[in-house]
Image (cartoon, rainbow, N blue to C red; front, side, top):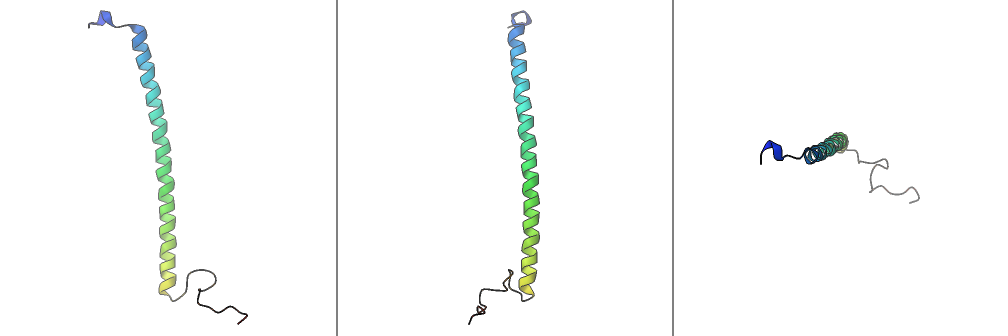
Length: 76
């Protein structure tokens, strides 16, 4: 196949198809980057919460606002 056999319309269609695929790939990459960023924020938040709970447990406090499950209810 030489240059004279190339159909300009077919070449244009292939180029447009490739540009569309590239645009979709760019959009997908942006969405994936945003998802990874949000997940990293959640991981860091959970790590801070876990550290606080470990510190609270090491200090002798029970996690949670009630102070523990072994406490007797006030009506006893």
